[in-house]
Length: 242
Length: 109
Image 1 (spheres, rainbow over the protein chains, first blue to last red):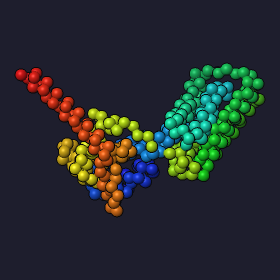
Image 2 (cartoon, helix red, strand yellow):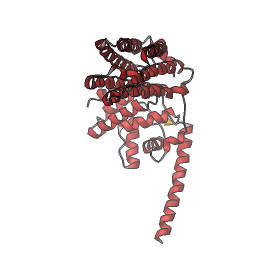
Image 3 (cartoon, chains in turn cyan, purple):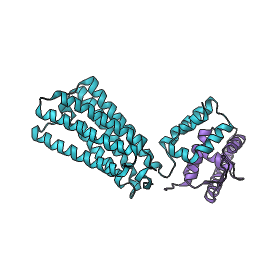
Image 4 (cartoon, chains in turn green, yellow):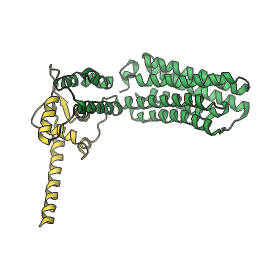
């Protein structure tokens, strides 16, 4: 493989530090098959365990992004293959929004408390839980507790509160970046889907709106995933995070 | 930047890091020279991906540092911490080797 492409496998922060000299090394000694595998393995290592000062931040946002991707795909799969009962969304949606809020708060306080970077895992686990529990619940036909119309309204208020809090917090931190902007857009998209879905459930008559809401919610997660996976810690206000 | 225990890089499972430190013990070298020297010392080739994974870890923990250079092939050298860490680890290995050889010879007698 072309040395430039091999170097391109590494994270941007890594390339910024080691890219030129690593390219020179690969040009001095063009890699064979085994060396190519070794370089690819090194790239995976650099993605999973970044050694740059902002490495922990990168690792957690990347894991969170992959989790958000899993959540979005799980939600779409659940919708496409199991055609859910709207009531079954209570648990996964609640956890999904709660994790958006946790992640937003986490990102906001990260510059002053970098030691708490591990909180990013709350997003990862919560996001995956949201998507996977959606699939499981729709598969086994389990209906979570439904508190009636008042319960639903309270639930909707909680979801909106959680997601708005998280989205605003994160948007403040990352707004100057394109990926940050995507997160700021993706979260409201997820919220719109959620509200549409909940409105349909409350009225009991707008099934189509509810199903559209699920799809929008899942797409929102996918946008969030993209934004996290492309987020650069040295961009915009995130440059102060390390 | 958080620096963990530098000795972690020299665990029995961190051979590439030990090789890199050992090759730099007699002076600065760039990546290609480190690869050649480490293969000469150990008999095992050190892949470029493995080499730079080790370099990044060692640099982050302050065991090595890049030497300012205009060349694309940036040389690295041991820091004071790197030299003392390497020396301590090699002494430990030497002690272990003596003990193990002693047992082997005692068992064979």
